[in-house]
Length: 328
Image (cartoon, rainbow, N blue to C red; front, side, top):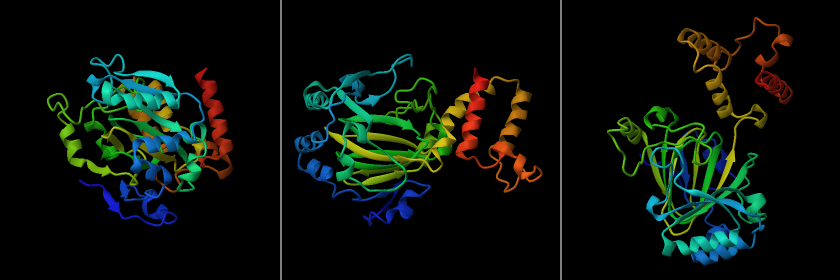
């Protein structure tokens, strides 16, 4: 299925139309007037020259893959290591490495680089002002394939240079994507173990169901896509130089903490209990965490509900303190 598209719209009005969407949506030409996009349309060298004006000089972490990996950022054969190496590198050296890939065939990729720290001022000249308390990052590389993964924050991804093919899977496709380790991941988030360009249906038969549910789109320079929270997404960058700027934001206060950390804690506390105890705890968690009753605790006096009431920064801090004490 194709991702829903909307034409270019007023940048001050697209929040309610696109940013709050619970399904992916592409906004054609949203950032086509950005100076960075215009520089990239001129040439790769022009883009590099433009970005270098904002270079802080600070080193960042990049990934290097040899030619045999064909840009797929992944694991080795038995999932005991990654198929790439990390290198601390400054922008000038990274640019030189990218320019040499047409000869070496290697892949160089730097992802999730905080714009404010590493390229200060870039976001002032290339900005959407989405007003979501967002984190702004830049992603730079040559031909890469990023396996299906999810992000907890919602994501507005703006394609600056090159072409990107994005494949998205609804959150409920989890079981059909054959997700790898939670605690050993290439970039922080668990990823699908299926090579979607050459799927092994004998090993991963349910992946066919994920393919049937998938949404796809191809982003050109200036296009943007909204990826809602928790949607699995795979990104293929196909040009000699591919650049993307994204905005991440969460729809709940940051003091609520990380749901992924809570999942890991749940593995520690519940997963290996006897079945009857797991069933009892499942019931408790459904009641206290996922209960959609408007007033499930009305039998408790309001001033005694404590952390059962909607969390504030104060009660969240107290809850974290209690957890730290229990984890000692």
